[in-house]
Image 1 (cartoon, rainbow, N blue to C red):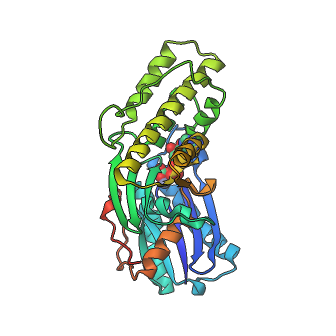
Image 2 (tube, rainbow, N blue to C red):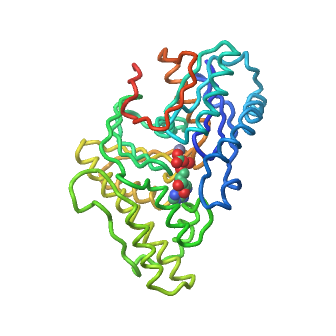
Image 3 (cartoon, rainbow, N blue to C red):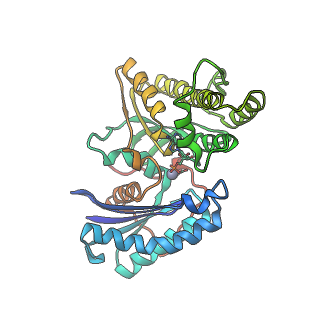
Length: 339
Ligand code: KG4
Ligand code: ZN
């Protein structure tokens, strides 16, 4: 069986074709970064308009890359949420309409389930059960995963997502959008011992997180110090240390609470080298393992949507003729996929 996956929930148009026997056959990605760069963040209306322009050409390119025609497809998966409603509607309308025209089922996919399952596209996929740390621009979630669709949220950010905190702090430091990777690059030259930022909500019990205070702390630190290159790098280092350390403390707690040793990290921030290294060290210290997607599948992409859609299609799940777009959609509302 082969499925086409379409991702348009934010500022990336991603399209892929997944075959349940041969794996990923083709994937194409178009990033809107240049469209939004002048504004320092995603402009929802511009995002929707750009998806309108790019989605169909990208679907054609993906079919061509795979050497397939629409008749070779058994379904169409599209991201139905969570995300920007206008952006979601573009992919959902195109996905649903193509499925109708091609006379195959349409599957409405949960974007964060896509991220969570992205490591399954790698050679050494994580066996169930595991703890998933989902860290993207829109969400920060700690999830106990027993199987596909068997998700229990253990903790989440009560304000900014980790990626959002990276981006907002980078903006404060005058870095371009999206600032997460740039801030992380700057931090490489920083001295960890110069500034110490708080580790929010780590002194209270529980697995919820909060990252919005760190931007204020950064703003105050910038204001109280010189603006030379080394100071900027030192501030970036202190910020990254604080976010990574906070995530680490919460993951450690989640492992202890559940008795698990397997960790999956996914979502844009899972591309962060420092976070990976720290989690690997944590796993090694308890005889556990860490799994994450290849870097290009950490951020938004069509491959993860095609994969997640295939699992649900094989489970007999597909949608009626309605175009589904859910800007808010808690991941623990998904149905389990029978093993
Ligand atoms: O998963 P994603 O592509 O989009 C959402 O679903 O939100 O995540 C994008 C986020 C952005 O906030 C970006 O700054 C962050 O992931 N990000 C990083 C790194 N690479 C991407 N944050 C920190 N370090 C990185 N290396
Ligand atoms: Zn995402």
